[in-house]
Image (cartoon, rainbow, N blue to C red):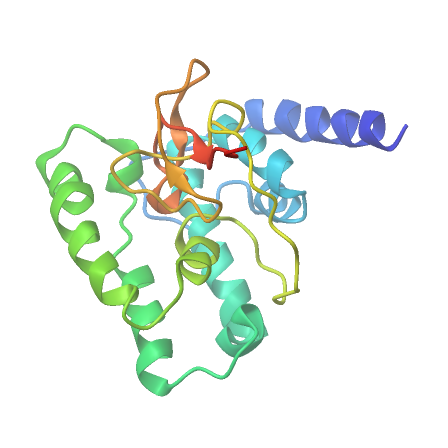
Length: 205
């Protein structure tokens, strides 16, 4: 019953989003702030589905809203540990690199350069200060809540098609193989990259 109610709620949000219009030529405030806030309140799986239904400008807007929320909460609480000033500044600086054009025009040279050159370099730096799980929560998940201890179960690679093979933020293993069920967005950096791999690890008996 709970799953049915969640599905109905998600369907209503998606229906509302589909009726929103956005002028992508304007660097304005959120075109659908209520819907964005609703999506951030969903479960992780529901967020991924709803994110794919957003317009490209709102795919950008929702990351700006996420950053605003975790700044208000506090980076320390969000990640569940005391951060240095350098670590906090690094998170802030990476969010400052976001541009709406990276979501609207995937073929533009600046977008290609951002995803293929800049982000792989900054990822190396980030992993000197943060764990893979922390980076995933910060830059590849819409989660905005305080860090809670949770158990992550290993999944078979052909079950969880939830990673991008170029930018693997998989925390349960490796992005090990192609998936039959793929999407052109929803994985990798800012959930803006293709889901083309399986995130998990094989169980060896």
